[in-house]
Length: 405
Ligand code: GLU
Image (cartoon, rainbow, N blue to C red; front, side):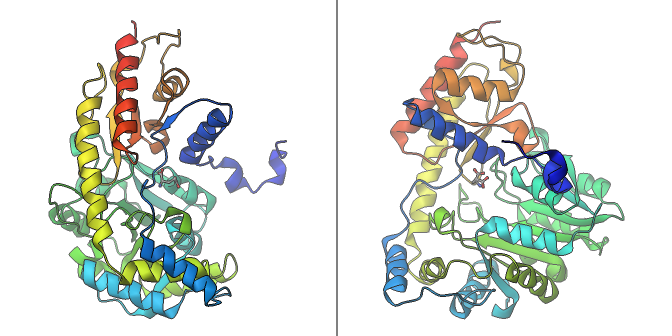
């Protein structure tokens, strides 16, 4: 039963549910009804969590580490996080300026809820991960989306950033490699954005680096605070173990930033979830301090899959995708499919129609680009075994071949 609108918080009432989870729920419902769906919707590695990490979780339970930790996390994990930022991102971080959260989403939520007042603006380059504007909305802020189309490689340009900043701008959200486009900002591109930010001292920056290790073709990863140390006091650098170590279900994200912000986020979290799951924190500690070879193995697998999926999808008549440089998504334009009719007689008027028809008629689940702020596209997550990916791409190709004017 729907709650009457007046009983809901008005920021929540106006927010949209997570588009990615909505598709995942539809897939689960279709599967429960007996359908065989290939899901290219969920953005999570299909690999198992490395064995030594699982063992650390089990050992934590056996050792009785089943009680609360401090709100900000286990000291040993926070030290490992500080060491990770030093080792991988050249950020000289004091462990006290780190915070462990229940997933990356909570890092973002904490940061925005701790700082936004009603009407404050947050610049969100589109295409964006579905939850950024909704979290801004939930915190009473106003997402200012800046369209960054294929012509700019789906990346924010300094001019577009400059034009989007007003006296009300409180944050800019950057995500590289990007979900959903896979775009990666180079050091020079980040430096150019930093030049703009340096003249607007009221703007904080949330750098969502969760796909840091999923970067291809030998391209080097850079994060804003590393590229421009003068912004260090204004940047919240966030990351987590979900994507790098195939640990999505363990729910551990973390961040580092100016001490006033980390303290505010800790205060907020202390009145909400408290410390992240103790067992997961022990597992995350093992992930960050143990052997790192699974990262390179995963990266190589995803690069190979990316090449296969891009090649196959570009064979589907009317579908077009560029080669993404990172993450595990292909963001394919389906513009040429709009206005056409499927074999089952469905007229495709939007990318959401395309996604629905692909699910109903081709048994392939994807997510519509307009949910990420840029249509008409479909996002394809290639976090699946080769055979299933090939099968899904062939089904998409047949779907495209069958479209009629
Ligand atoms: N980040 C993933 C995705 O975009 C996980 C689902 C979510 O939290 O949106 O599919």
